[in-house]
Every structure is written in C-alpha cells, then in structure tokens.
Length: 39
Image (cartoon, rainbow, N blue to C red; front, top):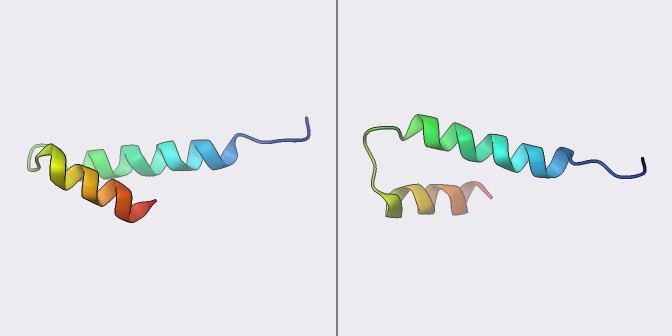
C-alpha cells in the first residue's frame, strides 16, 4: 500500500486529546479555538 492514514489518525488523536483536556469546563467556542490552534 503506497499511502498511509497516519496523518489523518494523528489529527483525530490530537482532537480527542484536546476534547479530553477540556471536558467539563469549556464551551464549544473555546474548544473550536483550541482545535484550530492545534491544527
């Protein structure tokens, strides 16, 4: 297989990490800003 889904999986993993860190103390706007900052 000449391609890998590693890049996409890394982005998903980063998103899940941010969601876990923000659990219970953030609104959607703050979550959105942190995701955009991390991308």
